[in-house]
Amino acid sequence: MHPLILYGVPFSQPVRAVMWLLLLKKMPFDLVLTNPGSKGDNGSRHPAFLAKNLAGTIPCLEERETGFTLGEAHAIMTYLARTHGWEDVYPSAPKAQARIDAYLHYHHRNLREASVGLVAPAIRKDLNIPDVVQQGARKTLSAALTAIDQSSLAEHAYLCGDSVTLADLAAYVEIGQLQPQFTNVFDFSPYRNVQRWLTRMQQVAGHDAVHVVLAELGDISQAAPDMDQIRAANIKALQALKSTMSSL
Image (cartoon, rainbow, N blue to C red; front, top):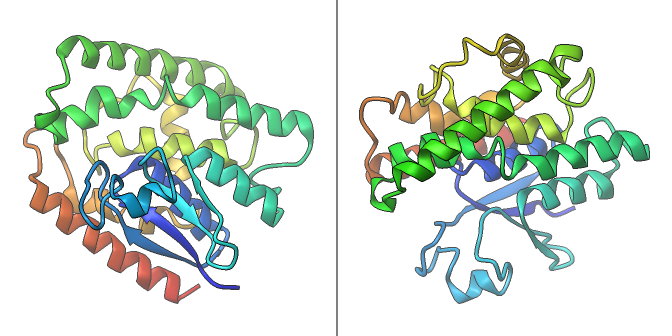
């Protein structure tokens, strides 16, 4: 079997989710650095990329053997789990699968707001995200964290039960990036169950390799990295990923 191709950059949360799943399941893949929003040769708005993913977003998966391409991280993750029989992270039992699907749908306008309200404004000053949007995103994120802290994580070790699923991978790359050892832009002290879950997730195979880019950038709570630093961190992460892949 030829390695899959994954287009994107490690700094992207959805890209990290797919990378983590592939590493966890020891599925060979090549990461092709693709700049989001760029029309350049390696950009997600270049005609060659748009032919693979009309939405022009990352990540995008490509199967070398069939030519099949697919965008959207959650669609990619569920597709891979179904086609490869990864029932440990995405059970075939309808009700168990439905709970994971429910979280993946919920994610987009809830925990995903961690990027809109906290990370994007600190990293991309050029986006000029209005304060009202940032405050709304923070409020939504806090409500979502309260919900999972007092419900699923109060009853189980992970979001959909007592083992890691696709829901946890998708959630952690968004929430986990806010921790002190990474961007350090959020206080988790009110969320004890979330804190315990974050610690458990750090022990899941592939965690460190997937989060090299954040470890390289470090604390952004006081000063934002420039584009050269972000680019260098992505390259360092790609090198670490290749090293990890070679040992699988």
